[in-house]
Length: 373
Image 1 (tube, rainbow, N blue to C red):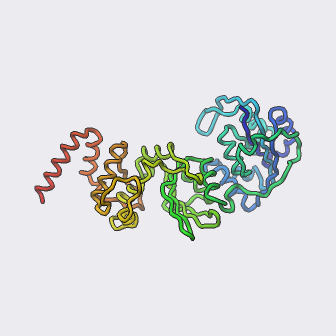
Image 2: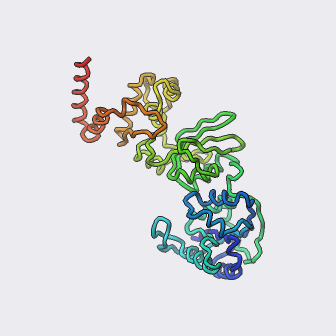
């Protein structure tokens, strides 16, 4: 099946443009050709949004690319072949034609390490189409092959998607989904602002994409605008201590698609995330615990959630049956001291290893507590 891919010729590649165009013409069909103009003062920020903070030697890339207009070519590989190639994570499958062409063109441009960019798999092509041109592969599904010309067919002054804020929730969530794994843990909206809590597999990438720069304080939200409204995004990532890492991985790999494009926890998990927040991260008189007591979330067993012992028992059962556990919260989050005492950790560990033994130990501890009383 044919694949769409992008080649980006930064200004440093234009010295070899004719040779590159001739080579592309022999190997690919042209479906779009755009000359992009980014404001010089925001060139680096646009690069950061496009590539993320994992981009090596970002300043070097900007120096080599320059801040002049650059050429984006959308091409169709009619017979894609994947083969092992060096990737950032080691050797992995890549579109051999686009990968090898990128290396050739960089060499022709005089060895400038970042003079040419090319997408090397479907996911990267989908990401770059969205962020650079605001389009998806479906927009080119029936696009005819165009005559290869050296002059771009059109010009655009659009920056990377999101550079001037997000037009809608769908636009923001589509961009996040194209670049990383995420799930919306909590979402609160008012007329003036909205607050999101996102679990992501790459915090810095999420921050740079959504807000243009990573937060220096990891306990602070990043801010952006969606449809003109201020949005504060609290970012949590795998292994940060806010939830059991096994639970976090399950949420990231098995989310449910919401109508506006958000990825949310499955119904079996969603109410227990709020319950975990209320039991573990919020003092008994805190807002989360108070809200839970006043209106338990749909999906939780019926009962009196004003009783901290009952709320905790419901959460205990869910975690035990799911194979998850409490984890020590990071600095800045309140932690329920009853959950992290040595006897309590021993009891949970015994319960996980041998439920029958745990019941015996629990009964003995209960008798000991009563005798002391």
